[in-house]
Image (cartoon, rainbow, N blue to C red):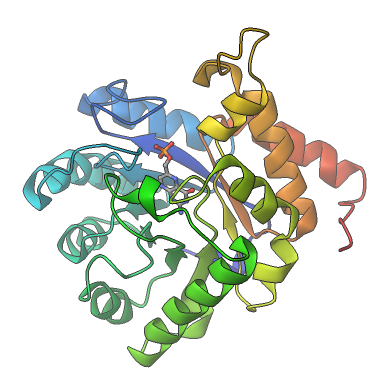
Amino acid sequence: MTDLVRARFPVVMGVLNVTPDSFSDGGRYADLRAAVGHGVRLRAEGADLIDVGGESTRPGADRVDAETETARVLPVIRELAAAGIPVSIDTSRARVAEAALAGGADVVNDVSGGLADPDMARVVRDAGCPWVLMHWRGHSRQMRDLAHYTDVVADVRAELGRRVDAALAAGVAAEKIIIDPGLGFAKTAAHNWELSARLPELLDLGFPLLFGASRKSYLGSLLAGPDGSPRPTSGREAATIATSLLAVAAGAWGVRVHDVRGTVDALAVWRATGSPRLVP
Ligand SMILES: Nc1nc2ncc(COP(=O)(O)O)nc2c(=O)[nH]1
């Protein structure tokens, strides 16, 4: 598989959660046939790779053990890989990542940025695969209490910088590293918007940046109804496309989305308009 980190811009990562409890699509693809069918569909709609996750990371979600997580993702990854579809494994566990890579995954998407499992760096280094280091401060049950920053962009930049340094020190090649601000992970809506508005300060770290806003609750709050009730997840696609496009215009390397078709269409418009850039 071509090295996605450098070969494409912007990369569209299609979300495939094979979990019963993910916040926006939980349970829909828990069945193997349904999951593989959805991955094939996302690829046909233009996804550059399919991000397969077996453990919900939504705030407050219960953790599952490595065996359960592996049992959920591996059959799906094997079939997608066998069909020639590039796959990333969305996991913070080294054992799950190792099994997924052996099953044909091409990229490790680690929401913990290597913090949750000290063995992840070895797995990634030995595989020579791209590694998404997302900004993270703790598992789902702790996240809400950890959303305290002096300057969220400066703090996220510094903490991501430390994760990059740790990866490099463990022998991971710099050209395999992708960073991600971790929208919604130990962050309030205000933090998410501040990070979205100041992406160039994260890009200054010198690594491709993956932007993952798709259907997240801060978009629901932005679009709340007159009674203050948040917009349901199904009604957040336009906002997702808008913020994803703005992130690409600001220099993001890729976007992680549920609605691949809409995002690909929006990026086609952006390219047809000469790929305008937001200048900080
Ligand atoms: N790299 C990366 N991975 C992620 N995995 C899961 C979720 C949670 O969203 P989901 O439940 O829709 O998958 N968000 C991210 C993200 O923002 N970045």
